[in-house]
Image (tube, rainbow, N blue to C red):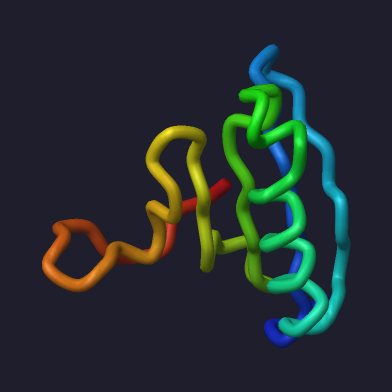
Length: 85
């Protein structure tokens, strides 16, 4: 996988996870991220976390249930560096 290819993964309340997109463009990854973070499963609490990873398997975008987008940190928040999913 190249650096300009992305994957999207959703994590469920029971600890399982599912890759919903693999090795797609940034445009498709962001569209999927928006879809899965606003899905019925996310609204009901079944989906606990959604991440986008780059070709190096670094997390570049993360959403967590009840917290919203948690990575990258918003301006003024502490944090930084890429984390492994």
